[in-house]
Image 1 (tube, rainbow, N blue to C red):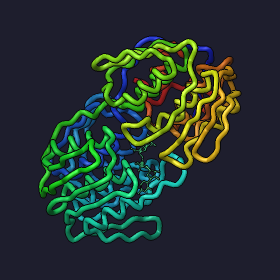
Image 2: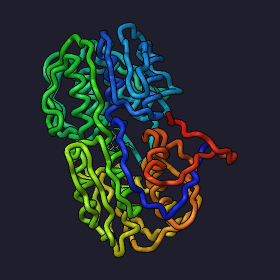
Image 3: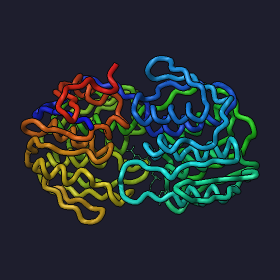
Image 4: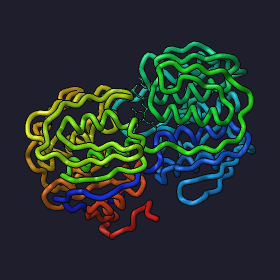
Length: 429
Ligand code: EPU
């Protein structure tokens, strides 16, 4: 375990470049196995989750050559295995995208039941319902999901809940199914559009990604392609919220502003000045910050992944803010830790009441998942005195060079091993 020692009372200022999207990258990488020809991917974030995906691909038999820090040449032609290794799969939830991609390529897949951030129950019933509708037999035993299809056949599938994961998995499988698939009530996130663009570049016939109905005409052969992953809207939103929360002034660069409209609007409600340019956004902190209610929703709503840093921002706003988490049952992992820092927050079910306006004070706290970890680091920057954030491995899963980017904006952060030794950032240059 590693921790960060963070000095408080810092206003972030300067420019920060946003990396490629984690959640797009972890969908695009498993999609590579549909092709028998070479694929080139760039703008992949150099984060633990992407490294794990790369290891899974190599373990399945894909040859991979790095081209610098963020690009890869992949050769999936000799791929023969249908069972990603448990030791790798258990590290990240998105490894279950190999269910869809291996089923598309081989008509078979054996994938361990996935792990991932603990955000409450995370069923996969919609994935399985969709695979079954496409013609797969599914058998779950001894922790493994075994799937078999003599052939996949297009179907009309209506998702009961809007799910990114189920949408990705069914788009992957249906791309190779015989005939037409219509997926209704699907996720509209930009990461779904990015995956569809990549699959279409390999020869798939997917229409409607980014709306709630996707139509797919299955194809037999996928060819090679080159693709650049979209910028990470969640990383960008994290820095936008951090700028406002720390009384800062930050230019967030290399973003698609359209993907950030819900965050821009919410920040403006708190009084922040947000200047939107074609590929960058400047956030200037408000003085004073206004309390504001926040409700998470699937895209284009305010993303659940930014609810923890959003909550940290609202601890600084005088008055009462009501936060409603509509996507996950257990996504208030940051609350008890923030209370150690003096935040006044009361949780009732999926609602959190934030009585803001008191200054946070530095304290030892623990990251329980990726986004609550990022939120605690922002809280530590705002607080009086020094904080120690334990278990920052969670943050390394999804933010490229997070502490270095914050240091470049004026933060003072040191990475330490549990034994107290100072360490270089795991994802430094
Ligand atoms: N759900 C079901 N049945 C299913 C699938 C989902 O009931 O078969 C429910 C979930 O329990 C949840 C809701 O549907 O209440 C939405 O879940 P979704 O499937 O959309 O989430 P996910 O695909 O598991 C992705 C992101 C998460 C992000 C959520 C919500 C990836 C790899 N993960 O998870 O990202 O929080 O969508 O936007 O794309 C993160 O980056 O920190 C992260 C957790």
